[in-house]
Length: 456
Image (cartoon, rainbow, N blue to C red; front, side):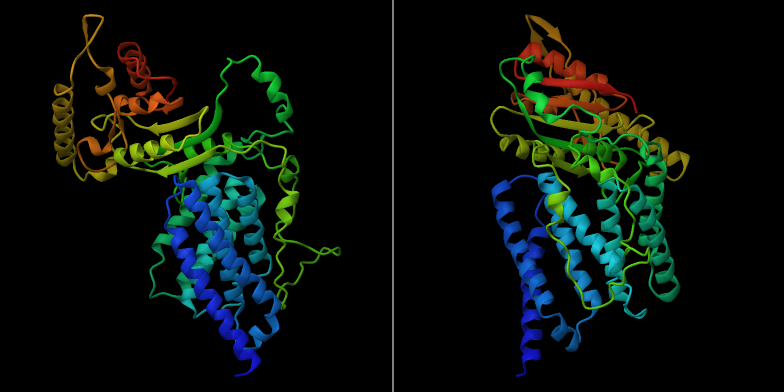
């Protein structure tokens, strides 16, 4: 066996090993089990770093044995996806910056553009790359890059639709519509100060000890947050809604003020011409993140972003996060949703015809009446009180009846034994405020619970 064949077989074996480890990490939940998830991440990250280094050291032999440029791009894309998943689990800025570095390198080196038109599988890989790069660029507020990627992404979908007429690209067209709508709605925030806490506009972290002296003796650390929303026809991209997107940014430190300095979308040389990366060079500066983050900033709170969960799923996540909440820490819970399903918040598109809609509303109304009639009554200081904790609820789903999609104020009460900061962005948020105030007085079960009312 020749040396080139040994190199090729070793490379393929490294790919298979890394892909198996990646599959295990990809299916893990983005919340809970910190130590276990970190262990899996380290193993798969080590496997891909070994693979990436091996292809760099043996690039010439691998190309001679038939290695395609899109295969290199696929490896880099997996590493970027790995970094992004770890960012979603930990909220550490360095991970999403690393993801951006790899995705930007794939774009500038045109790893996917050399693929033949007939390779449908490769075009799907390219489509997924653009969708993931767009999500990373959105979170990092790279406005110019987002605009550039939207145009390229739209053109790519049109090109695929024209060259693969036997394949249905309807889902990808919907993704294009989502990102166009998302960027259009978010334009109002494009040219103002960032939503993140930024040293260019806000006080420096060094001033925090002086602010803390005005607080109570027991100062809680903000370490975890759960963000979720469900509204009819809400603006979203992938599984990130506009509400959770803005909350996600408001709860983070800006990696560095210089990150907002405008940079060219594609790297250029000193003459102004685009740099040609079509050769064998595959070097990606994985240490670039050191120049993009400020180690003096406190860590970002860990955030679990849930896309349209059922009430039972949401409560399970809250329980998991509360169980792992460190001592002297507080959790933030952000709920953005409509009120009762029997109101105008039920999506009209789910009913065809006035009779079906009327019948459905009657069924929901009867169910709500049945649920309310079974609500127990409590006695506070010898007086009978009606329970606001179980009269109103948030509607978290378009289908199904019963408690699966209803989130009552009383459902959150068991978790308020731990410090909790509650934000309810809904037309029924007053019920959560009244319900938790009554339950704190009557049952004395909440250590800390706060509700901010906001109308949608």
